[in-house]
Image (cartoon, rainbow, N blue to C red; front, top):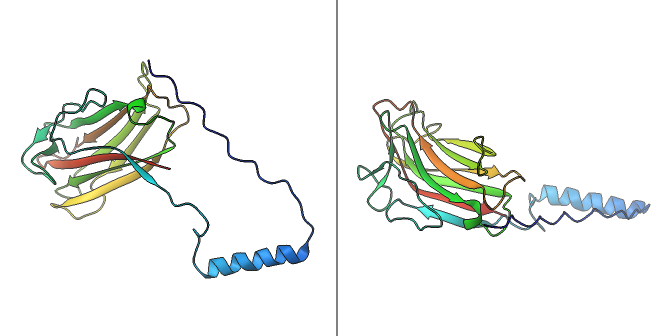
Length: 202
């Protein structure tokens, strides 16, 4: 059994020091205005880092620890390699990836970014990529976030879509992560997806 994540450290407390120095306060205000005028809002701050957790092009069998579900694999189209995932009126859902969170991270993550390359026929194609996280034994997900694939073009061409997602504090190493493509209302037009990826933002 995988142990739960250790608790995250609390943010450092704000300084309680007080000052009545008017010149110092005025100087800090002037410096702040200069920084705004210089359009350098991230000076002195650490950049957001992206750590890849998984990537699949649906070409090879997945390992035992991060099992790839049985998607509707097809060789009709592919962004890279030879195959992709297809959803249409006959194959409305494709559970393309699932894994225990503890096999992806050795700590409690706070934010994910999910992305994929998709081929959408037109703006009417009601297709989504869903990221869900569920605790074992629960039927209601802790998290369910959708990325809509047809909100913007190009259409009938491969395009990259992604979304950043804040994670709930109630996740644990045994929580199940699932990435699912859905095309319930695509009619006779198929939607294709390839090069599915999940990363941690920190």
